[in-house]
Length: 296
Image (tube, rainbow, N blue to C red; front, top):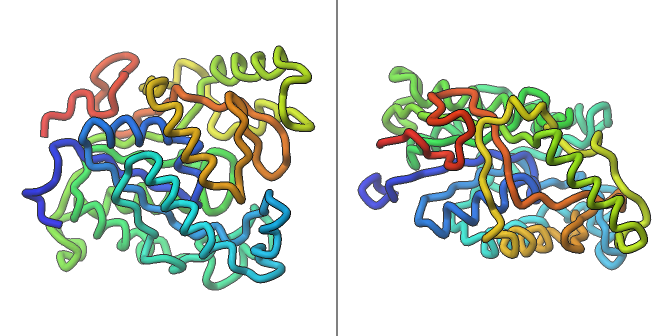
């Protein structure tokens, strides 16, 4: 893809597994895609070690047929169609890095898992994407990956390292011309939004369609309100986000305005999505546009 055909605004998001993008950034992705920005999603693994919610698909799991990864490729494609995102890729190609499982699991030690990947080698795959797409804005996880999952931590490391290497003139010129990402944001959720969401859950009482209710500790990336740099009002794109989350049917059960993962504990579905600016200049105390202040 040549630079001359790229839209003026270009957003890159890096996620660990299929479904992470829709939960964290679905409304943001739909908004910018609808507004004509070039939205690129890079997913680092196929999510092969995930659990499966529907009983008729339980045979896909790693301890049975071990075909969940290929199935989730299809789920991700359907989710991206719902969000209007046409550019979605797997880091190094589908299956290059395998899901590492939860922290402390035996799968962490597999030679082919993402947790064991050489950092600069993995980052080089993302450098190629950055130099091709030349995004002004990158969205990634914080250093803990939001909740300590090894693949999320590694995705953070790869994203930050790739942003550094992509701008380095002497690094791998075979991967394209150097490019500096202007703004880097980390996903987050302000504590006030979490408290309000769980208040809605409690108020729903018996109407909550799940056998249990999660807690704030189950929400990744919760921060103090003062740490939030930007909020995207995704109200107009709530249906798109909901459809994208439903597309990940092996991983997510959705009953608006709530959802549950395989633990069957209800959580609030957020249509306002929040970010911390960690590289670049803020355009306001609380931005409402990730491209704010970007002129080229």
